[in-house]
Amino acid sequence: MKVAVIGAGLSGLNSARILSEYCNVDVYEKNRIGGLASSYCTGTYCIEAFYHHFFRSDSYLLHTLKELNLGNRIVWRVVKVGQVFNGRIYSLSTPLEILEYPGMSFLEKIRLARFTVNARKRNYRMFDDVGVMEGLERDVGKSLTEKFFLPLLRSKFGDNFAEVSYAWLLARVSLRSNRKLRGEELGYLRGGFQTLVDALSENLNIIHEKARISRSGKWEVNGRKYDAVIFTAPLDGIESIAGIDFEPGVRYQSSICLLMGMNEPFHEDIYWINYESEPFGATIEHTNFMDFDDYGEHLMYVASYTTPERVFERSDEEIFRLYVKSLSKYGLESSQIKWWRIFRAKYSGPVYEKGYLGKITPYRLFDNFYAAGMTSMPNYPERSMNGSLLAGKEVAERVIEDHLS
Image (cartoon, rainbow, N blue to C red):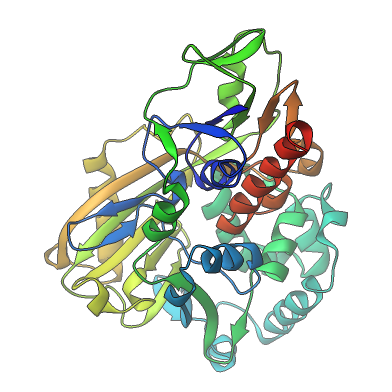
């Protein structure tokens, strides 16, 4: 049996890795191996093009790392997070810092704490058809919604924020929060996730071509015949396949990420800072998470979300100057910056809008044609490395069940 896997992101690589134990597999990738987990390598180290970390709850990711003999590279750290209010950065990492934060009243802080505790007890899937603004205003009130949650929603979903399902927010709070008294605990892979991508792709036959899929009896990719095809690229690409009538029904958001190497830190110790009204949503200072000595320089991401129609609207130079000008208000000086790179992802994730649960992509779409990735069930209602790897595993198991069992 011969299988073609379209896309060499985490879902594609993991499905190909598992299937290669049973049959012949070709992986097609026109861009960089690793997808959203791909890295920029300086010559002395590799760092992800888009910021990455993981959580204790990411059980399949942790299992896979150990299976690939990468378990000894796992590092757990407690990090500090912050928020801008009235032009000033405040740390919101410890209970005392939260109590002293001037952006909310004491009563609002009590409501926020109660919301966080209750969110962990709820079945978030029950709120798939509830709008995030409706759910928040009911549970925490309009004032706290507008003061605290609205800037976060705008930075994540842009103008689509009002369409987002309450299930997304509840799941993000309940599944992705492991707060200690000193801050939030996150995981990382020493040496970067390039080591995971390398381990997943080892011994795979990766064909660096744009995949052109057709069907004449069997499925064909670039003229090569296959018994089955696994499509792990964004679903919009399926519409261009001859003979397929498929409407994904999923809206995507795009991301723009500025990565900077610096000779001085931007902030003394905060890893993640959310912003109120800047052209970006957050700064993520990687070397306030992982050791400076691992890189020999300070590393920081400046992250923003937009739409597929606008992701290439500005040049790299325009984005860099715009972001740095805004950050100068918070103390960043251009002399601190040694180098910079802009990375863009036209399809960085779905818009988890109301009713999204009914739009999740099944693993088997057509006869001998399968799909897996960011719109699969393991990535509901939040895309993650854990979900993408698990989607790759589950689609591989479906192909094995249909063809090899």
